[in-house]
Amino acid sequence: MAQTKEAFRARPGDLVVVEGHKVGEARRVGEILEVLGEPGHEHYRVRWGDGRETVYYPSSDATIKPGEGSKAGKKARK
Figure (spheres, rainbow, N blue to C red):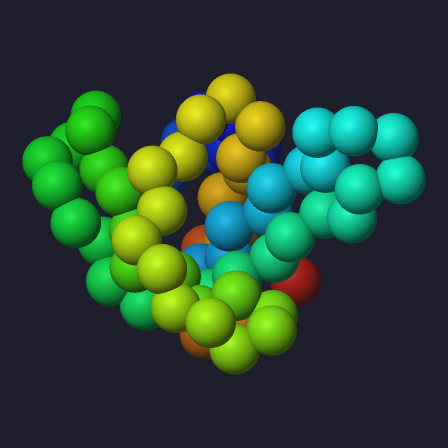
């Protein structure tokens, strides 16, 4: 799973971004509501942009970005 500049453990409030798999397929962005599993095998309860909530197991097409309320997100905006 790709992450932003500094490696960090995802937290509730962070964003998961999943790129489209086919030409013309839109990227999906969701807010992590809960981190499940152990370090190295995390999966997440995510609320996607369309309002649906799912349990998401990230793969190589996912990027975790600091959310607006997280400490890492506040640092990134400075």
